[in-house]
Image: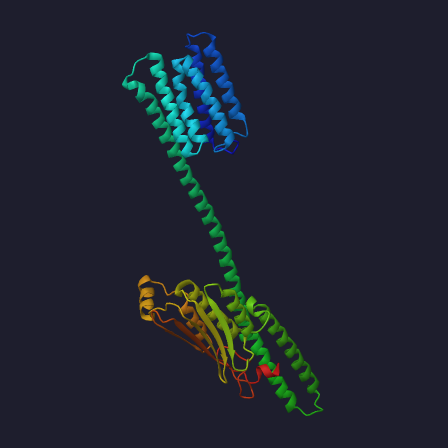
Length: 412
């Protein structure tokens, strides 16, 4: 009847149904007093049932299943006319009809089968008693309740199975995302450590060797050695900076911070949220930690706008000034009450990873982070970092974290 894969429970139920119908047909034939006619019709019905049970095209809710049930019911009606014992075959027929037919057709089929069983009692016994109606109708009610109840349990089981599969998939995706986040964090940490220690140290050594080279007489024997040492320090400084670039976030690998912010705005834009990016002032080369901090701040601010504010428009502005660089992220979302949000985090016992993390990044580089917002008035976030100073006294990219190495970047 159905070639789909079955569980052990459903397979056992199918075998029980087969055994019940065949057993009732054998009982009807054995109790017959009408000669061989009942035996022949019972055999035909058993053969027809067996053919449908093994036929691959007899599937639930198909035309073939409906035709097979109609043929089986017609043979059963003939058997009913010949023997009153055939009335008990109605019980397995109820289950077949409810299993193979849609509910809108299965219930009427069960009602017709029950009516035929009642008519059989009346035809053969010529008397109407409460048992004449109670038996077939009670059997039909039990079959309907059993099949519909099983279908409801099966649907619930399928929903639970799909939910478990979704949870397992989500857990795997979350684990992968956590691994990726951990990898990126470690890359950023290594880049920052190399920049703050090796690169800055080599830059200072190079400057000192350059000063020593200038202080030596032109014909000093040590001049060649000092020059070679300075060139070796310069080569190693360039190699250290290549390591820093290789360990930077992927968004910063193929362009400047302004380009990375433009790509971020394009990725975040949706039909419901328009994100624009603008650059103000002449761009200045920034140390990697500065670029990472400003990029992460923009990512976090836009993530909050997408998830919490319901904004329709957001704008990222990167401003280069003489002594500082500023990142502004403004949206027209629902805004929030900063004091209430702070109280909610304190009551929940969690500091969160949004604004506190952004403030921590800014403070680590000697900068500030400010947020202007109110319920229903959108949100404006501004991160400002002081630029390190070069030897010429202007802003540059020679140092990080508020430390200044005179002429470090120029000497490179």
